[in-house]
Image (cartoon, rainbow, N blue to C red):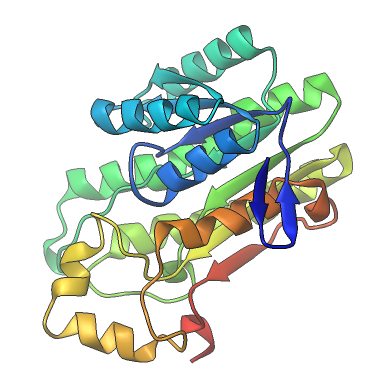
Length: 259
């Protein structure tokens, strides 16, 4: 049972399917769900060592985890993966869409193949996982929780990241659209919008001598986030405490959006 001061999360008996659990934010989230009693199904494409580390840490905490090979840029692999998870575990109670990629280039120079890749992973794959898992939740008739990963760039354009901003904007919008269809079926579809969280992906930005200090100066909390700062919101939105929360995208950003 995972405890956060006066809040206890118990996901015993629940099955969580999570993407992006090999590193960063969603590695921390996956481990926390395992520690809280959930059975964790993880997808992996390239970072096998990272996923194995996540699995090891869940099992060391007494939890259960299984890794599924899946290229999120291929819809047929998503369909096959969800079917395999359902075959192995019998259900998916919680879907956490955490996998993401980014590519930086000036818009006038942005490569077509990179645009498509970012959109495939950060936008299309999120919808396809929602579709496949949501269908199973509807058929089962017992509801469920889906948490998508948006970004502050769903609200702001960013700089040299047009594909990423477009993808995250789309995630925020179809989170609302799916909510409108599934809320009456006791399926909660929400999203989080992480702020500037220090991960392997964002380390070069933090180290940038111009942008790093300017970003840090705008965060009212006074520091960049840690991946563990995203755990509580994901567990809350996946819990019974969030049963009447539908279709929202919640910034978790140290106050950056309020500045």
